[in-house]
Image (cartoon, rainbow, N blue to C red; front, side):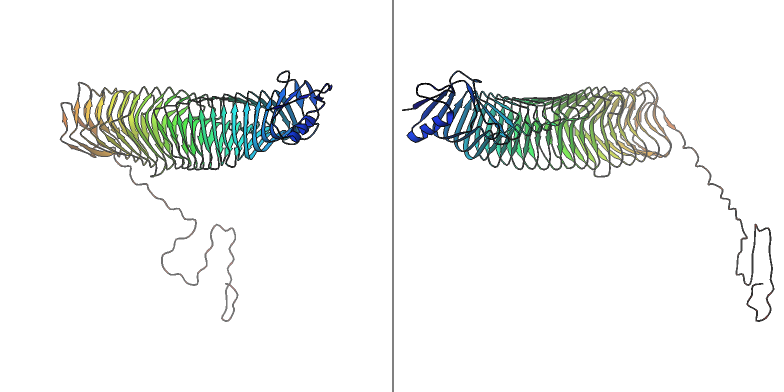
Length: 569
């Protein structure tokens, strides 16, 4: 049987004037207790032991408990609190070092300390409540948070650390100075929550933590929407991040799985994977990113599949020794490059559709910079669909480029390998090589070019076998300046232009065409420069003894030296 106690600041028949006296009486009887508290402000710290239920008799907000300084409630045992306002200053407002504590329709206010502290042997439930200013800390504890609001925390709104296990559902976290929720060496599940206005990452997982996020909305945060670092793991599902610096990020060995998320209006990047982190991102949308939609750098290695990137600046960028795999995705309506591989990185792209971007893929960097594209289509581009530069190496298999300027280009000291690819309806040319670029193409088709099929200039080298060039307005192939190459088993057809215009440095092997071949000799080499040496003094061939020279002098003195005299002469 539950013993009932009444507390009223005005006293009364069988009423306690303060809550502590009622708790003392309940502890002496050693039975489960119900303490009903009349409206008022109680300047005391409650120490609760055993099985006790504290209830605001006239509903939430009518009872305020707390001293000018110190804690409001310390619970150990099996304690339930309903409808109280607990105020703490410069200390843990509510502490539960052991046992179980349930707070319902409760408000906790903390200034300069922790709002709620659950210890290693505690289980705490917070339901339909409000936590203002202070941090809610689960340290090795079990926790359940449902339908709560956390506002203006001076630190992290919720911290889950040291092996704690916490679920937060259907709650709102706003205005935290650091993180909305941080999980470190612990486990946390965040479902159906709204987070806004955090000073750093809204949700942070670090130090081997496991974080599960689902059906959340994250808005207007100063840093990341969700951040995984220090070998943390976890998943993010069906979550929308808007107006963050980075939507979802992973660093320092983290490896999250992200599915069905929308990352919109991120000021820098939508997906950011760096410093040896990994991550799998599936069926996500990245919209209107300020800098790069999907960014891998500094050894990061994401896998992206079934995603859509739209609007914004750069679509997918792999830089700084990173690597990534990207498949079955769409990139469209950007102001910069759709795909970018720079600086010793490796990108593998399969089954992509790229539309209405200035350029499809651009690469640059040392010989360790590689990009492999397969079964990919580029449409409506203003610059080359693919540009390989620096010393990078690019391989294209079954890639189509249509409705643009130039299909594929290689420049500087880069290498471009093209297999079973097609270029259609371009205004400039199908494939171009400049600088010292090298191209190897097998079964290349160029149709409807308003310029040339392929072209080379400077010292570029193009090796094309099995090429088919149809309806190219100027020529099937043009080789200018010091460029060279080989065309083997190629065909050029149409009613305009020439078959090949070359400089005599091209091997034509089994060329099939009814159009003319034009041999345009390379310009003669410039004569060797004439070298004129102008000497401001005498030029002497042979040995000279006992001689003295002077030039550009206004006055010359000569002295004779007699036998045995060491003076100059």
